[in-house]
Length: 132
Image (cartoon, rainbow, N blue to C red):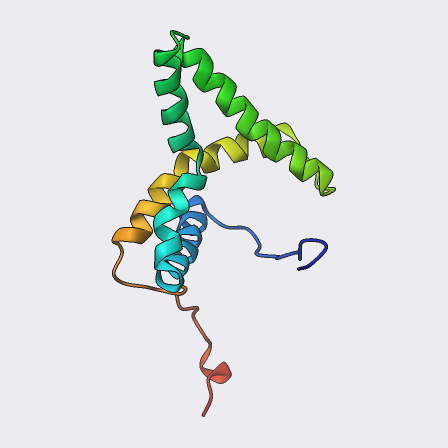
């Protein structure tokens, strides 16, 4: 395994392009490792929150407070890991992590349902750049 991340200069992307890219990678995971893909939602915040709020009800604790605490712990542990790896952690990083956790189940489901695959939108190529 690499000791550090490899920069991926992707350039500026629209929100739709980012979501499409995430969905493409999810489709690749689904097709490459279908059994593991079925378990992937268990690594997301959503099922952990669901279990925590159920447990809160059983323990007569306020569910919103437990959900907030679990979310803070989830994002906090991830931020601590990123900081340990030497990455910059900002308020934008924390907000991005939260947004990712909200969107991740939707991307997983979209990739699960998708039956078609488009690697990327074709780029326009000038006639002189095309092979003869």
